[in-house]
Image (cartoon, rainbow over the protein chains, first blue to last red):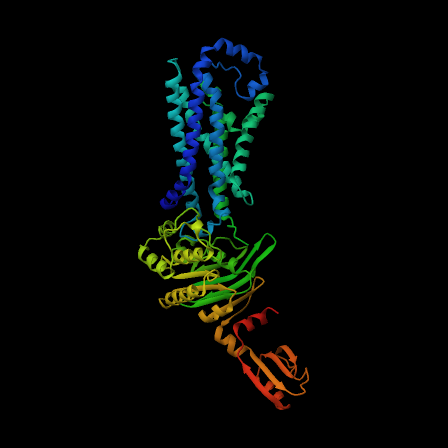
Length: 269
Length: 290
């Protein structure tokens, strides 16, 4: 790990980290501010929900959720938070190495007296810090908005804490999978489509899995591994699924190091 | 101990040839010219030596250490100016140079200032606002600020105006006098001839010749021109004669071998004018490419 690379990388991330953090914060605050209205019309709400096709409810992870309670409501809006976090993390993952190779700055960096593993570690550390900043904002906003808009209704802070902690392995999954894909793809021209593809792809898998009741798909997507409403209801992570997620992240990281330290850096022809 | 030693370096990009079986040595304190047209494998060779890419076969050492295994350690004493310079667009020149300097243990501030003054580089501009020539200057300062012992220059003068080129050559000569070894890749033969002591010629991925510039010019080839009335085209068709051209009673050719053979042939005819000279590097070079 090299401090100068870390600092340089973090500097490059800061603007995007600020944008993502503020957007996600706004999303949480705005949605939570609507909670009192939902809670007030609980009767009406469950009647309306009853009219929706069950498949649609499943797609949004809303089966068996009572939107009038704080955990129920949070479980619904947290899906959108997760989608944003997934795109952000995948963005960092896909961009980590590919940006240098797209803009041809890799020659500059790799001709310096540093090993490739240490370059990758420094870059990863910077991305992790950038994501941790976002996490801190998400945590503060979630508890803050519940306090503000919860109307004094009781909630289990421990369960919400567990949900908020699940963000970390969740982001790690998208960052590391993005990184390893970027190292095996020939050349990435723009990062965003890849990041969106990975994030929405995983979400769709999860949504289809719920709709079709297909549990095999659960194994693949972190949206199932860290499903908000189930964490809030159970008060625990689904251990086998979390382990799958962690294993995929770890394998991706190992794969990335192996690949990055052995690969040819492309040059202008 | 040689500063650079390449042993049968071979690089294929998939099926496409990069370089094949390239071997050479560069000794301490010399300026080694590496010449060949675009696509011959000059940059591939340099990028292999810097372990930006890995060889398909063969190996190389720098300062007696394996390029791949000791890469980071070697690169402490190596400066590199790539043929195409790309830097973080949004950074200011000064920040990029400071970032570059932060990779080395010694304090580079003073040398950085000197070099920037010499190359007339404006330090407060953003990289994205710089012209090609100015980016090249950033590259030069960046490659030299840590006072490396070995310099890789990959077509360094492209984009520099003649005045800057002169400053740059002067700078390289000074570095060389301080004992810096230079690996100078170029397709512009005039500059190689001005600067280098020894050259390697690379053609389609193979090194076809490694020699002293002077030996290359003196002992190998003579450029001969003979004016004589009624000259037959095949009069000088001897072994060792190449590029024979006959126009209006003037014959021109290159000759490699015992010069007396040619002189005897000249004695057989009524010659009105003769010149025998050393070919320029350019002519030697073209010769290798025919």
